[in-house]
Image (cartoon, rainbow, N blue to C red; front, side):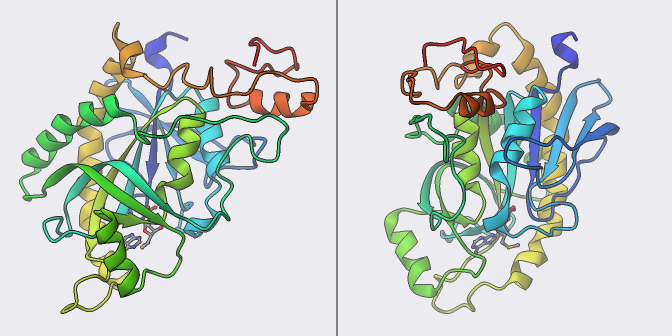
Length: 315
Ligand SMILES: CSC[C@H]1O[C@H](OP(=O)(O)O)[C@H](O)[C@@H]1O
Ligand SMILES: Nc1ncnc2[nH]cnc12
């Protein structure tokens, strides 16, 4: 298959974003990965130009999967198995800052982990292979930078006045209940600007799979830190969700062809900075490792493990 026809772009839709616009559906696939099935069948669709994307609804079609139960490893593993190299993930978030009003779009660059350790967060978990991925910069810096000017242009063209913020820090909490007022105030003191329940372990797994990953966060509410305001309810979130999803679809429609060009152009290797990043993260091969684990890992990292257990690297 020519590189141009491959599905290089994965889109993960969050709350309210269960499909994209202006796409012709080619097929749906539901790959069974070593970590089970993804949240929903993945739609492979084409833009009028022919650019293909793989779309996955994080909470399943009909929003039936709560944040703590999203099958992150199956989702990222399945997208990688389709040939995806870069993921744009959308998420509805609470704002911890006055200036980030509901309706604002944000490209975060940092994460504070407030999940409770109950979500499987590594492909290596439960295997005899140990790896420590770099995660100091949890999003793909080049992809985020690239998105900045294009998302801004799309928001300006839409003319609804949606603001764009970059360089912000997102807190990922376990949920499903929202934060207490005390927690919300504490996250502000910690330097948090946004809060959601979804960016982890998604971002960690994308990094382990050597995929470029960026989050387009859309603010729906002010969480619970404003002492003169009611604390956040799901109804508050739903009020903004529809309009944010419409704008998200427009943003996606505006950037996808350009992104495909960036991923297939001669500078793609610069753009895909995660490629090769696991090379020195995987502990050297040892006879104590279970060959079946290496076969399992080959599903997501065929670059380092092979399906037959004959490894291509010294890892
Ligand atoms: C519907 S309110 C809380 C819910 O919304 C966000 O979902 P997503 O990130 O998938 O858009 C948030 O992370 C929570 O899961
Ligand atoms: N206030 C909030 N807390 C956590 N996740 C959210 N998603 C949308 N708003 C949220």
